[in-house]
Length: 200
Length: 200
DNA sequence: TCAATATAGTTTCGAAACGCTACTATCAAA
DNA sequence: TTTGATAGTAGCGTTTCGAAACTATATTGA
Image 1 (spheres, each protein chain N blue to C red):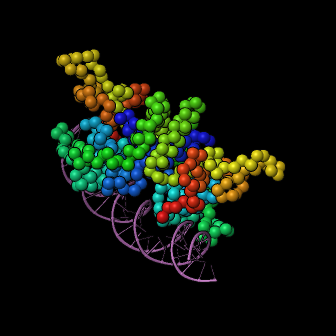
Image 2: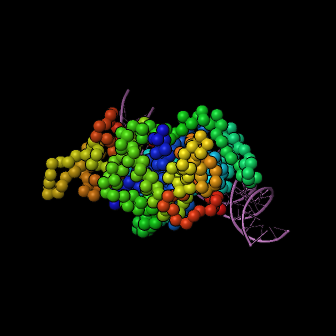
Image 3: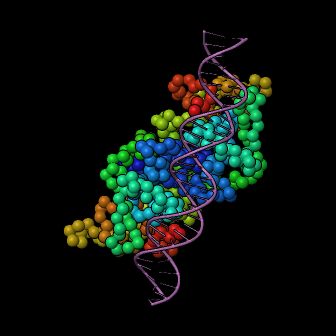
């Protein structure tokens, strides 16, 4: 019975913090897009990946992204390897206004927690999210460090630390290891996933 | 920097769990209304109180509530003490479908936590919400047990446990003590609040 | 090689949600 | 009694969103 109260608390907190009114001219949905493209790695900065992450349709995602491109917050470039795909990157204009993200109130509140509490809090949130995602069948995004596809090729193949993704057969840079990825697979994974996000 | 990840996690979890698609014919917003009127005490089951709680306008709240009344999920009765006010109560039809609330996945995930972890989790969530609410100036709803207006009149005034609200000068029943209230005031409160929720 | 199928992205359309403003009715206070 | 605040509703236009249709490119398999 107490669990229901907690669940409602999470929803309420998320709602309050997502900035109901529009801040700096952006809607909550548009902020969500900017946040996503800030955190996603280069394999995941596509409309489809965002749609999968955000639990919406590609059509809706396409519309929202288009408006941000038109406003100069996102830059769109064609993929060189796949003619159908586009990659989206934040512009300087976007990076400049991210400090006004209405989520910052929540960030500050979280930051005010004692480190130990914050760590446990984060751990519990991830655990709950993993469970919800499992039950609802929604895709789970994660970072390389917990990913089943992550390969640490010993060390120093050619003088550089050589990490790689065994799924995409791509080398990985250090700074990419903590970015979100569509192709994330839990270490204790079930059936192997096929490339693409599979949202129709 | 980690705090931002946590903040995004909360938003994401709330979004995933609030049932993006419509479950049982109800939209996420309509589920939010049913949830609210399940948890709110008799002083708080009004359109204005819900609007304040949910961070929206009275106009928007009124519309959404109207549709739920029309569908037979809420019953509307005039207040006897205030001719302007109406009180809304869940119908049996509403109580019957609450088990289908898309939030249940999150409830189950939370319930799967070890009791100690769940307690700490709940405590941290409340703490963070309190901080966010403080910073954004949004109203905080709470229950009698932590409320500055709560009065425990010793014991057994006339054979019954006698609780009361010092703000409304109303006696309180046992089962009302854990319901949400618009007039909640933190124990460590600042300036006294005036009756009403003050959302224009 | 070529047809069938899957995927990436966009567009269009209709429905719903939302905020704003204006309005009525009631209450409270000067 | 008059003035101002509050509760609730209605109308309007904007925005959002999902479903479906559509184009273009990849991939698969006969």
